[in-house]
Each structure stands twice: as C-alpha cells, then as structure tokens.
Amino acid sequence: MSESTSLEIIAGYLSERLRVLLLHSVGTIGSDVTEIRLYLGQPVAVVFTDRISFLTWNSLTASSSNTSCVRCTAEDIRKTIDSVSHFSFHSHISEFRQGYFIIGNGIRAGISGVYNSGGIITEVTGICFRISRCVIGCADKLVGLIDGGLLICGGVNSGKTTLLRDICRVIGRRSKVALIDERGEIAAVSGGHVGCDVGVLTNVMSGCKRNIGVISAIRSLSPKWIICDEIADDSDTDAMLAGAGCGISFIATVHADSFEALKRRPFSERLLSAGLFARAAFLAGASSPGQVLSVKEI
Image (tube, rainbow, N blue to C red):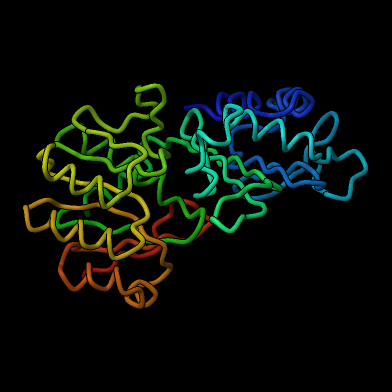
C-alpha cells in the first residue's frame, strides 16, 4: 500500500471542496502522513510521525491560527459521514456503536460525537482517518523471538499493528497461520481481496471479534500460529487459553508501556501466568514507532 493511494482513498470520501484541496496537496504531504483529522469548526489536521500540520487553500501550515487554514464545516462532516456509511445509518449501526469504519487499504475512519441512550453515535462532530501502512522488514529483529509465543506491547501509535503485520507476512510464508483481524487494519481485506501481504499460508478472519475468531480457527483451520491485535479482556484470554491447550502458539499485541503495567491488567496477567508467551517486547512509543525498547523473558 502506498500512502499516496491511501490519501486518494480518503479524498474520495470527503466533501467535494475538501477532496479537491487534499488531492492538490498530495505532493506536499509526502509519505510519512499517518492521519487526516476533521473537527467540526476547526482546521483540517494532517498528522505526520513527527509533527502536525493544517490544510490551507493551497498548501500546508504548521499554525492552526493561520488565516488561510481550511476549517471543517457541518456540511463537510455530513457529506463525509454519508459517504463513509454509504448513505445508510441503519445498515451501519454496529459501526456507529463501535465508533469506527474500515475503508479501503485498511484505513480506519474513527468517529466522535454525541451518543444516544443506546450507545450509538447519532451526531458526528469529528472524523479521524488513520492510515495503515506496510513496512516490509520492520519486524526482522522480532521474528527470531517468536518461539514459545510473543506479546508485543506499547502505547497508542507505537507501531504495534505494523510490526504484527510484518511478522505475519514472514511466518505465513512457511507455517499455517490464522490472522484474527477484528478491525480490518492488518490485512486490509476489501471486496474479498487481501490488500496486504500477510503470507501465502495465512487464513484471514476479518471483522470478527477476537475471541470468536480464535475459537473458530481452532475448530476449523488447524493453524500452527494464531495472530491477533490488541487483546483487551477476559473473553480474549479464555479463547487463547483454549488454543494453547491444543498446541497453538500465539503472537499478539496489547496496550502496555511496561512489564509492570502489563501485569496490572487482570486478563494479561492470566496469560502470563499460563505461559502463553515466552517473551514480551516493549516498544519505544509514538516518537519512535516500531522501535523495540526492550524484551522481557517471561
């Protein structure tokens, strides 16, 4: 996936005036963009790995107070969310409840706004397009650490998903893998086609909950490895413990910036105590995405 293609995909969902301006700025934006953010009444933000800029009528600026900044209107939000939801609120209730849509190239369009009593966003005030990127070879140093299971730990935007995707690519070339891609960000499945190289022996289960995907893979796919992103609760833990009992090894990510923080979370402490992972790799953080800070033997 190229970032320019991702920007073109995002532009296709925007209101006409924002679409024209974003496409006009593609050359200026370059290749290290990570997000395009729309806030009602605020300048359109372009987030890079090391800075945040704002869209103007002819380029980008570092200052949100620049008078040439393009501000997002209610009409921009309405037209964009209509496009993302294919003009059907009722057909996408689950997305309005979970707060995000997956569009082409594995791009996640996160939404914020006003929730009704049923926990569904009915008034959208912000949209964040988060670009998923493939970095071939970024996980080379971790591939040698996977025996016995590997847990990749880090905070938001630390590169966990990118590393997991590349590990899947390598392992899936030589072993049977089941990839549980709940949010559709890892394999970027669209129209039944896998958009990212995740290995020729990898079965992708996209859009299903992790615990359901793990159990289904155990029953029907006979994987040697199960790979999943952002394990988060006891239902995930229960499913993974069932898989470990069948001789399956796991590679997964979790939000935790230290071993102490990892152990404080009950679901992950259960996984550590059960011996599902031989090692935990901790990432440096958003300032150095994908960089391994330390590896802990468990």
